[in-house]
Length: 345
Ligand SMILES: [Zn+2]
Ligand SMILES: [Zn+2]
Image (tube, rainbow, N blue to C red):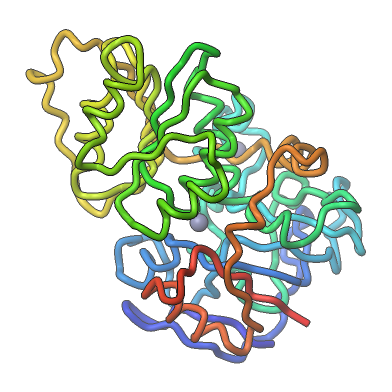
C-alpha cells in the first residue's frame, strides 16, 4: 500500500509499505477512507517534534472502516465506520481513570499515531487500544463531517470544556486557524454573552466574518483595546490562546481581566516568558495543553444533531496519490487553503 513516510528532517515521501497486521489483542485494523494534514505534521517535518520516529507513516486525523479487530476489541466491529482518535490511551491507568488521557502512562500513550507509530496518511492503519481509540460514526454523519473529531475538534471541545465559561462572559479566542475555528464552534455551544476572535491573516478574518457573523473580530494590534471596549470588567473573562505565535501568549494574559481564566491550547515553537512581577495582583488562572481527547462520542452526537459543523474548513480535496501536492498547498497556505481532505477511493 502507499504511505506518506517521514524519511528524515525536512523530508516526507509517498512510499510502498506492507499492510499492517494485528499485533495486540486490543488492536484494530482500519481501512482509511479519508485523512487530513495537520499543522503538527509540519512540526514533525521541521524537526520540532523530537519524539517523532523517522520511517513512520504520518497522519493522525482520519476516518475509515474497521477491517479487522483483536480478540479484546468489543466497542467496534468489522464494517463499522469510525473516527480515529489522535491519542492512544489504555483506559485503565491513574490518568485515564481521571480523564487525563493525554498523560496515559502506557508506552504508546498520548500522541503515538503518525508520530511514534504508523499513522493514517495511507490506506490501512493499526490502531492500538481500539476500544478507546475508535468511535462509531452515526449513519447520518458523513466522512467529511467526522474528519476532525479525533484531533482538532477534540482539542477545541476540550479547551472549551476546561475554560469554565459562564453565560455573562466575554470570551476571547486568539487565532482563527483550523483549531481556532474548532475552538470557536465549541465555545459557541457554551452560549457566552460575547465572543471575540483575534486574527492577523486577512483571509482568515474574512472566513470568520462570512461564517460566524455574530462573532466580533479584531487584530493582534488592536486586541487589548478592543477587548477592553467590548467587555464589562477591563478585559476578557476567559481567553483561549490557540495561535502559538511569537507574541500571542503575552497578548492572551494582557487582554484578560483580573481573575480571568487563560487557557493555552497552542503549541509553541519557542519558550514563552511568564513575567510574574508584571502579572502580580492580576490573579490569573492558567490552564495548559495538550488535549485530553476522550469526548469523541459526545462530539459525534453533537454533529449528528447539527450543533457542530466543521465542513466549511475543508477547502481542498486530493487523492492519496497527490498527497505531496496537498502538503505543498497546505504548508505554503496557497489558494486560500484551510484544511485538505485526502480521499481514498
Ligand atoms: Zn493534529
Ligand atoms: Zn492509560
